[in-house]
Image 1 (spheres, one colour):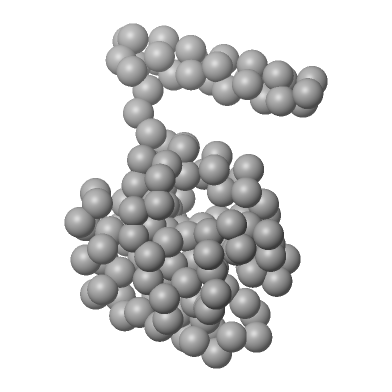
Image 2 (cartoon, rainbow, N blue to C red):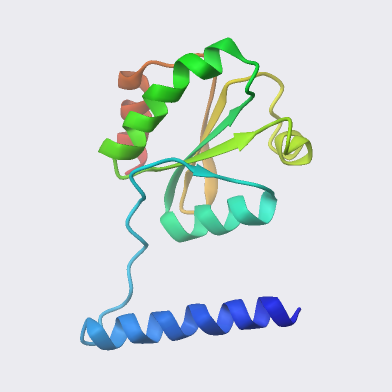
Length: 137
């Protein structure tokens, strides 16, 4: 509980500093990272979805061949689009995978404004992912 309060305090302090630096303008959503973020747990996924606005969650497994083929594509998506890519290992996060109804891998869920907006199951090409992201940008 004390950790949560301290985290919120630091976040609010950072927002106030940002507001002061931008002349009182409202802080915008954080710029998306150019590399995938590895997520461990539902709270971390929720925080990431709230912080970045447009998040492509890649539910994968190390033993999954199509997941390995998809990896360079999602890395390119992370580097070249406004979407943040979140990688979630289903073996390490079984409860989270079950919560989002992941029954096969790879499963990609696009979060827009913190809520699941699209679901793609199986191998996807880069053009398809870009199209889905642009539809929600």
